[in-house]
Image 1 (cartoon, helix red, strand yellow):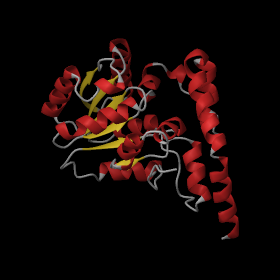
Image 2 (tube, rainbow, N blue to C red):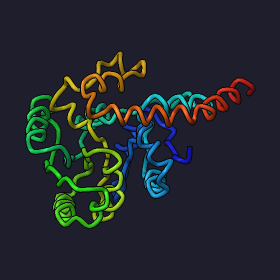
Image 3 (cartoon, rainbow, N blue to C red):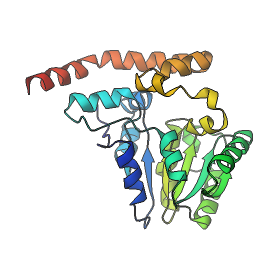
Image 4 (cartoon, one colour):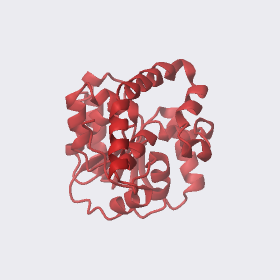
Length: 246
């Protein structure tokens, strides 16, 4: 549908990041079906996603689309699980997202469960509109401070697709770091009740779990996403029939 998703799985994603030379800045996107829906109406967002270092298949629709095109090795890559795996590595980290209370809980969780993690800092970004992200002086100052610390990985935890715009506009202010836009995954560290059980995720019903937890905030997002997927059901059917005939 115009968005280029990396042919990747969780283990390959971990290896690709560990093997990255960190000689120049870059960013990694985790678009779910909702972000792909937005990109279908926003060519600039599509360009942002397609110019990332990696664009992860975040959610069952992307995994299904890959499978229907013959890429059975593609699996959903969770920002939460990828972050946990890389906290156990020798890479250095900076967390930019959530609010002050959320960051306090995140710090406590990491210090308790990932004692070897090399975290260089935590910061809560200002709440701004998509149009303000590029020139917001507070964000610019924050990114300059992050660059001074030079972490290997900068975990961005704001709503999608705002985080994708932030990474696009500001990753070049960094000398070597990789930005990873993992959205609400930071909240899972501070409040595990928000994260669905693994069996729910595996059968593709994470959205239903989240909707049950936050119906007033999420119902319109999921309604619009399901309408988008329904309108594009011929795409999935065409890919399915092509796969059957090959």
